[in-house]
Image (cartoon, rainbow, N blue to C red; front, side, top):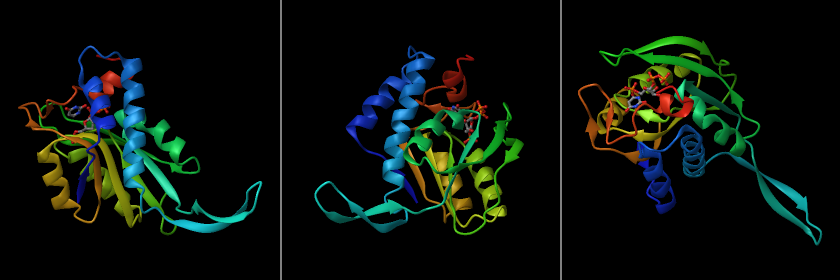
Length: 206
Ligand code: PRP
Ligand code: URA
C-alpha cells in the first residue's frame, strides 16, 4: 500500500524543491525537512515499550521506541535523506545499497551492497528520494528480503504512478510512503513534473 503525504507544510517545501532555481544547499535542507515529515507518518506504528520516568514533580509512565531499525539509503541520492532519518532514529543501524540506472533502459544496475543481514525482527527502512519506474526500489527490497528482513518499508519524496504500480505488483507486502505522487514518466523515464535528477541536485553535479 502506498501512502501519499498531504500536508501544507510538505507541499510548501516540495514547491521550492521542484524549482529549477533552487541551489544544492537549500535543496538538501528541503530534502531533510520533508524526510522528517515522511518519517513522522511512516513510523506511527513503530514498536514502543512502557517505561517509568521521574519528572521534577512525580513519577509517570512514558513510552520509548523499542524497534531495532536498519536504515538503507539507495546510493547515491538516498544519502540526502539519511541525516534526517538518523535525527529521528539516532540508534538505527545503517546499510547501503548502490544502484545506478541504465540511461537508456532505466534498468537498475546494482554496484555495491553493504547491509547487515537480519538477526531477528528488525525493521528495514529503504530510503531514496525518487521513485520513477520503481526498478531501483524493487531491486533494493528484493535484496533486503534475501538478507532475511521480514519488516520493510520504503520512503521516497517524489513518485510516479508507473513506479507505484510496478512496486505494488512485486512487493505487495511492503508499505510505501511518498511526499508527492506526480503525473507520469517521460520518454527518458524521468518523473514529470518531478524535480530533475535528485542525485545531481543534492550533490551539485548538474
Ligand atoms: C535515481 C534515484 C533512484 C532511481 C529511481 O538514481 O535516486 O535510485 O534513479 O529511478 P527508478 O525508480 O526508475 O529506478 P540514479 O540511478 O540516477 O543514481 P544516483 O542516485 O547515483 O544519481
Ligand atoms: N531519478 C531522478 O533523480 N529523477 C527522476 O525523475 C527519475 C529518476
